Length: 70
Image 1 (cartoon, rainbow, N blue to C red):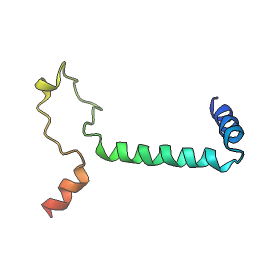
Image 2 (cartoon, rainbow, N blue to C red; image 1 turned 45 degrees about the vertical axis):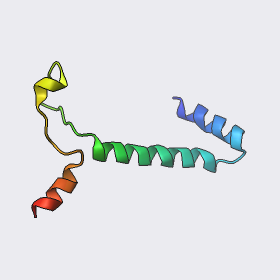
Image 3 (cartoon, helix red, strand yellow; image 1 turned 120 degrees about the vertical axis):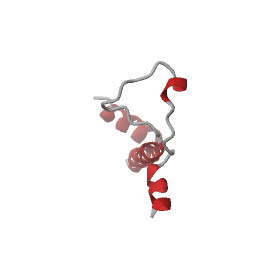
Image 4 (spheres, rainbow, N blue to C red; image 1 turned 135 degrees about the horizontal axis):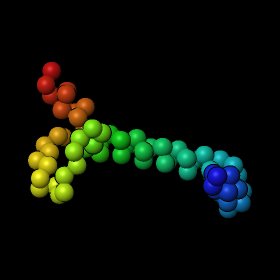
């Protein structure tokens, strides 16, 4: 519901419609980076009270660890 408002705001500020899509592209790149480097998957796991209890040792980017194994 807020995307049309954000589009109109970005268009009014910059005078062109491309600014809005550059902002979306930047957010997409940020999302891809966060997906690659967020270390913990919590689906189906019991969540701990603190990080001291979890003993999580997964790498920040599992794809890099897989490359070392082969």
